[in-house]
Length: 230
Ligand code: T5A
Image (cartoon, rainbow, N blue to C red; front, side):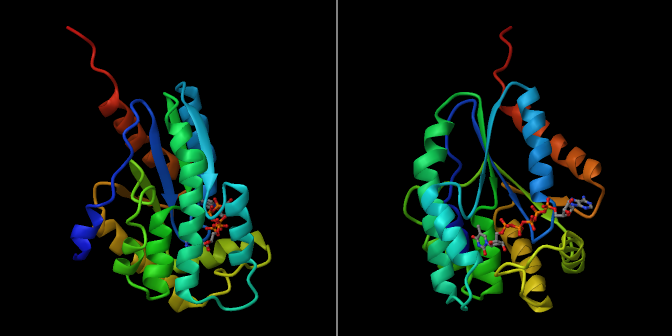
């Protein structure tokens, strides 16, 4: 199967009235900042909103998160791939699929499969085929209705990380080449999934980034609202 054929195996879940969204971007792109604002906005429209993070979100997933992000040894990229996929499968099974079944729910993921494509597939050089093939068993074939890719350049990521002044985790210690490969990995993911992934300019003030995201959310909700009867 070529890459385009593989990509077609991935579908958004069909739960009427509920949505699955994800946020993507390199370190410091502003994902967590925007998720807080999107949650508030959707709640004000009457949705029940759950925010989940990857890796993590379940007690099993949080243990995997610690194992990866606090690892003192270099992990093999295949080990990384399967750790992230394990955390993802458990989160889908334990939380996401059950919660989406409740009408008027929005599940927001802070990172999902596009992180694996960019980090393990591109920057760690496993290739997109290897990543997608490792996700061909349900529930890993599920993808969000919309993914917001907050695009910032690598140097802005380093600048925001410095400002935060927190200890660097496993991936934050990587050099410039790794960050450039992350950006190009996200570009490739956007080309492969053009209808699902929306690129948002993350190099704007917080309110302008939110306004761009809100425009797309308005459209998604409008398109899926029941039409008034004549
Ligand atoms: N990973 C994960 C993989 O390798 N493969 C996978 O499959 C998955 C799922 C997870 C790590 O695991 C890797 C990727 C990651 O390395 P994480 O902690 O969940 O790590 O994710 P991070 O991206 O590291 O989280 P960050 O907090 O660094 O980034 P955010 O959430 O994008 O950024 P945010 O919102 O916290 O903002 C960062 C700083 O910038 C400021 C904020 O105030 C904050 O100080 N900021 C802005 N400043 C100016 N203008 C704006 N528009 C701003 N927006 C935010």
